[in-house]
Image 1 (cartoon, rainbow, N blue to C red):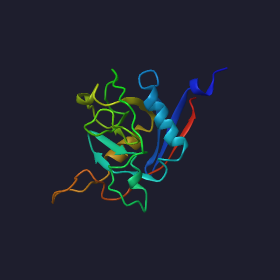
Image 2: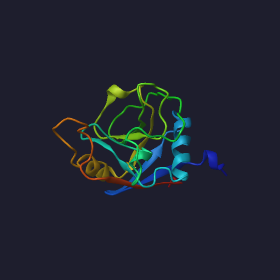
Image 3: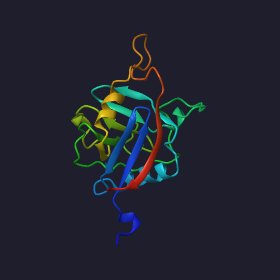
Length: 173
């Protein structure tokens, strides 16, 4: 019988466009995986939104400032702590989930991104910690959400709110 800490678990990301199932890589990013699970179990991600979408590159979420009624600028929030980087040999290819961060390698907290197109230039510079094992069609729908364009400002911001309704940690099948 395995202990809960060693149990294989996945994350189900319920989005406005359908569900994504994420399998974790605790062998290469144990602290990052545990941080993501801790935040998910606490409901931290529930009601947030994907605030940055760059088709062919990535879809970013996990910022608490994207919750309805929050005042902070989307993309600048976190859980109140940071996780030391766990750079590894996993390639940033379509379907990989990785931690977003500032220019400081050890600044990741809650924000993450889903790779839409191969982004191997991020390898060993961002902490890849899992991959989409179900819901590639949802990843594609998210990547195709229209974003703001022209007139300066952030062109990767979705025109309409793209909800991340909930993140649930479940036993792997």
